[in-house]
Amino acid sequence: MTWSMWLVPPFVTSIFFVLGVITLYWSIFNWVTAKVESQKKPVDVKRVQVWIGAICAVVSTFGLQMLVRDSHLSWTFTTFQLLILIFVAYFLQVRIPYWLIVLASIGFMLMNGNILQPLSWLYTILFGLFYVVSYIQSVRMWPRPFIRYFVTALLFALVLWGIVTLRFDLAWTTYVEEIANYLILAALMYGYFNIQDRDRRIKDRLFQAANWDALTRVKNYAAYDREIGYQFYHSVSRHRNLSMIMFDIDHFKHVNDTYGHLAGDEVLKEVASTVTNLLKKQNEQITLYRTGGEEFNVILPDADLVEAQRIAKLIFDAVAEDQVDYNDIAIHVTLSIGVSALAVKDRNPLDFYKRVDANLYHSKKNGRMQITTD
Image 1 (spheres, rainbow, N blue to C red):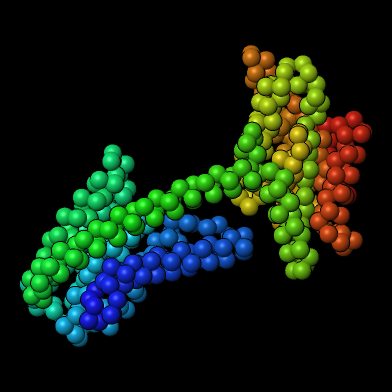
Image 2: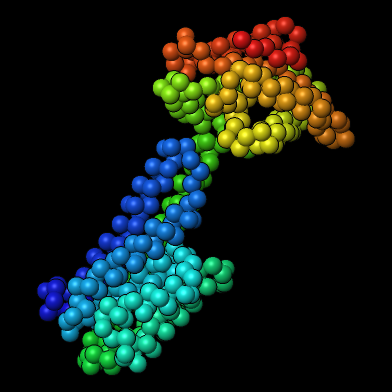
């Protein structure tokens, strides 16, 4: 970056270009993941990161270089290119096939018209090696990561900027200035992504706490409430089937009073695990929710009452055949189950819930250990 081209300090322009690409990346990434999640589709976060990160890096690098490729200032975005490489290889851990690196490098040299320059080839080879070393460092859990990161960034920058300085016959004061700016930005980038990573981990923990039951490791009432709202209005608007199963563990208070609350916790975990494993075998999209103390719900998208009854019977039998081992005691439990399908008279999710709950109450009131349907 130079005063003659931008009329602002090179360090400032480098910051704006790098932050611009990173901001663009996060904006697109958040938009894409939110869009996919809103459609209730599974999100491969790593794959989304790879594609968006690679596209942003390639477009920004080639796009900016086209502005200066035919001028004597075609070296001005070298620091930017090195930082983008670190962004892609080290922080996003984008694994680019080696053949693609070679192909992109040749295309870059052709665009700049320097494919016949030996120093350009040397620069390209070292640039590719920089990517490989940065990527390996990012995926290996070696000690003192910042020192390794900073030393690697420094060594490659010294050599690569040295090649640029020789090829374009730049002043060595420019070389020192660019290296200093680059190192400051590389350190700032490391700090920025550490903060982002810490925030992401905090958000993940908050998301887990807000949506998952800590004891049974199944989704909780908050997650159920959002999902039933979405599924209800989705099914009504598209005239699709929707069913629900609700079940209670019979005489759960007796288990707590007889064997202790730790035994009750083991019963809850075992029932949740048994039902979850059974549902996965039936349909990966069917989810179990713990909506109360010993109360669980199962939402069945696109399932009619007959299908819901079939799955309810499988749940009923699987739990009845299971046992919970606690302090050398085998505890057997049974379920009371209510089953219902979406009806025309249901005006909102609460109406639907009340009918399923009424069926569960009927099972409990009339002797337990049974299934009641509409």
